[in-house]
Length: 382
Image (cartoon, rainbow, N blue to C red):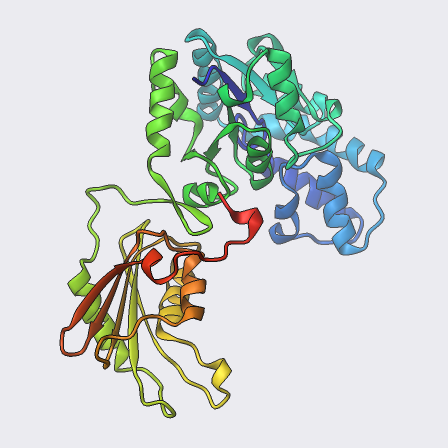
């Protein structure tokens, strides 16, 4: 059972990332380089050195790390104290005190330097003694996404990795928790709850207030376990699925939508029109596509891939919980091998696949019937 909670600091206990990013951008601007969020995002949560050297390397700028660190340290405390609202401070301090009261061991494990961690602790109205341990970036060799900081924390606290819950907001941090063999609760900020789950978090929440739900350690663990039940693996992606009572298009509605879209197919060479429809596991919404041929046959896109790309363009990473394909064939045509492999990235083995002819001949399968052993890139396998 979970008995230890290991908090990341930035973006979890305190929303310091906007201030950190502002100081980073200001320092680069002094050097004549204007950064955007796209330049900064890959280096969030990976420690102070990477925070400065990553964007600098990308921009071809030599960094004097001691100068950059001094600039950051000079401006950070006052800006941080002025930026955090009282509600956020109260929530963080309440969560930490509550967890210790009901029996959890609680630690901060931050890639930030020790001075910054202590400054943040003070801003939220706590002292270092309010935690069982505070571990900072100077005490590890390998920064996140390596799990060294979490492994070291567990060892010092006398906790087994399997009994630890890591609370993180960044992809690097989630990967570090998983690398350490621990469960990870994702906190929305760097990514939304679905994105956090796709990065590997076993559960995700809008804020750390979820940790206040239980009056005992057992109740808190139960709440987290049930939170995790809202996520499911679709191919290579953990997707937070819609609530059971949330409306979703039924199969007949999907068939009719695919039929209508089929009429828009561009097929001057084969004259074989196909319409497809996928349903999002997260929202229940449906997205359609038709086949679009090309003089260079290899550039043709099938209806199934067209529908999937339509869904991703609207929602981002998606889980497909139903697929419908409509064709004028007897029996109705299945997806081609290329479409099946593309769909495998976003589809569960038991996802229903419905093949329908224009005459109403309907064949029902599950995805694994059509592609029993899809290729999933090794690093993406859950």
